[in-house]
Amino acid sequence: MSVLVYTEHWGGKFKKLTFELVSYANAVAGMLNTKVTAVTNGLNDESELRKLGSYGAEKIINITDEALKILDNQVYANIIAEIAQKEGSKIIILSNNNTGKALAPRVSVRLKAGIGSGVSKLPLNLNPFTVYKRAYSGNVFAHLVIKSDIKILTLAQNSFELLEKPVASTIENISVNIDGSMMKTAVKETQKQTGKVILTDADIVVSGGRGMKSPDNWTSLVELALILGGATACSRPVSDEGWRPHEEHTGQTGKIIAPNLYIAVGISGATQHLAGISSSKYIVAINTDKDAPIFEVAQYGIVGDAMKVLPKLVEAVKEIKQ
Image: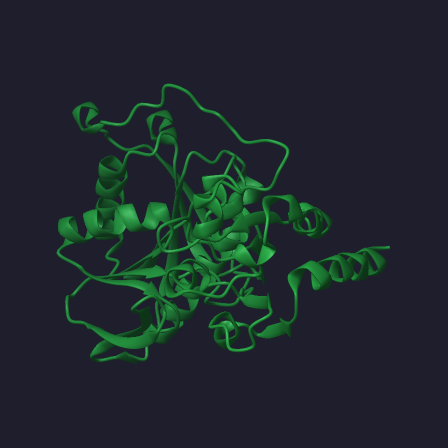
């Protein structure tokens, strides 16, 4: 028996998100007195695979089939389910990102497993198996009991610290039998964004709302993001007005992000917006209204006019950088 964790890589490299997952899986395995098996696919760099062992993965299964370079949820779910059965895994852990949200329900059906989606802490109890998660756009917390024999957990990003626990890991490169009729996804063209940090990958995000007053006032906000090596974002009213591109819209109806630092400039903090950024590790808010909802979730807040505060903040960061 082992705890199985599915680990994504991007362009042959693991990110902090991956190591957070393995750290969490290792902590769960410790509670169950078992080991961690990590599954990934299409990674040929052994030194990169070994990094998973630094966070407690004792066994690393690397699927080598070229066909799996294209993410097909149905095929991936079948493979993960088969490996889980072979390894005797009773706990399967994925990230609560787009990939995990697509795979978890499919794996659940194949294994008749219960799901705890978006969990943000270690299980509170093993019998009955109880997990902790946010609900209703982060406004409340829930204790979810999973009664099935096999359990699937998707971990909310930035909800668990990185815990290095180097172990002597073994790497098993395998090939799987893929039913070609199941492959329904085809990639005809790939366009990669260059020259700026991708919003969903950014560790730092600087975001603006209607408090920016005009699309002409975005210069300081963009400059701050550049200095910090972060991405720019905006609230829905801003993108609806055409001040900023829709690809920057964060919130319940936009992009769900979980950076280490989220700076909200002139954003009041409507429930829909908070639902998209509530997993941020640190939130800094700048707003003229001291009673704005954003201050209820922010670790740091500045009550003031963004047009006056932002330029001073940019200068202060420049001085520190120099």
